[in-house]
Length: 165
Image (cartoon, rainbow, N blue to C red; front, side, top):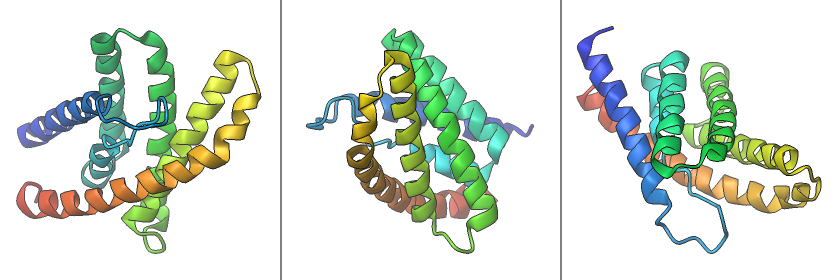
């Protein structure tokens, strides 16, 4: 692997981790809801590197969050939902990018992330009542996906034009 690629991947892990940590301090009136801004890094990783590197970045971020925050159960949520989101966005980017913009791919990745977190919660808490939150959290996922998609578009143009050739 080239040194430039290793450095960029290391930077992506660092920035994704920092953004994830900072999100805990963004006041949102809905408990445990985050904007998912680290997905900006994940989307750009899919575009610049591919699936394997993106998986590595997401996995490392999830492990480091557990180490820093000391909440091992969060790994189950973060990793399972993150993995599903990566697979969704990777497949959509690879096969549907003619029909979907980066914003659309981001929205579908965000919604898949929310759905998996609800399913994991249902399994861990052994309850079906959380299914009632799907419409509400799905709508939030659409809006956060739009935000992440817009920012990802700008970031990708900058990275592609200046740092990755």
